[in-house]
Image (cartoon, rainbow, N blue to C red; front, side):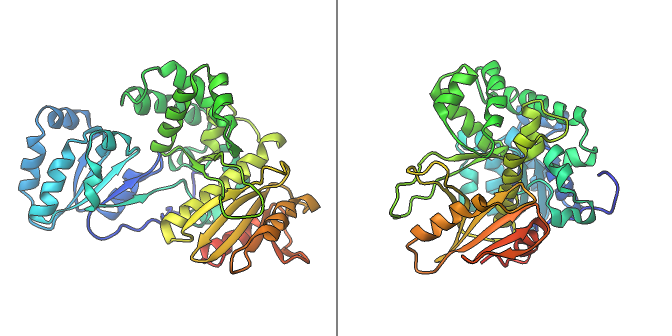
Length: 389
């Protein structure tokens, strides 16, 4: 895991000023230093620098004033001092300075009323390491067990790093930034939320198990999303002949972190493999949407009348739809295509959706109903080449 050639990330820096967000340990600082080696670098994790700008923000402006017009400036962990964005705004407008601003959460920036520079800086995201980035180092078994967050991958996916990640997240991301009033309640919430990885959310059940109110749980879920550890996937609400569920599904950004939140560090058990595999596919799709515009929007589908029917992902681009079912099995069972067939039979769009099952087998198949059954490698090839649609 830790050996091999240098990993080149797929994210390319845009022109002009931009934010790059990503979960703690995703490799933002490394990426910034690689792409902007000659830029003026402001590291707000440097406590000495942080406190000097905290007590006198004017020092930041004075430093920028000395730079030639058009210079590139990197500000790492900008959410620690949102007030600096006032100076960033001023120097974008007045001196045409170009800023690369990194952070692990936009929550504190929004709460400070900064409005993320009102559109003067585009937003980018950095995800866990993808198979295309890892190349020959990629191993699905290791990714499902340890995850592929850059920090964890670089240290061999050891238990100590994963345990420390969760504790550091609670201490530095949640407590230090004062994102919650009840840290103990949030700590109880995390492992319960990890149980919902790849599942339809039931906020009342989550609140009961975590020992907090439903309103509090909804706030905690927003924090998970704002700190980029998880996201909610909404149910499809098209005008079909059946009524769809409206509760979202929850996906953690990385299988290793989802397992660590539950204190699972050993081999992947059969009962957790399905959710981990589905969640990993979700992260791959989300990353390629961000990096390469793979699709415009996405949902999952599950009619309320039939609890056994579901399609994991519906990807939308213009009028085209791709329906994807992720199955952590090496054999294609008849029930694996049941949801896809039901969705296709109910769909009323102008173009027939493409139907895909991605599974752990080695054979590429096509069913009589026109469903493409793709091994993981074939599925990744289609995603990487932008050939899903």
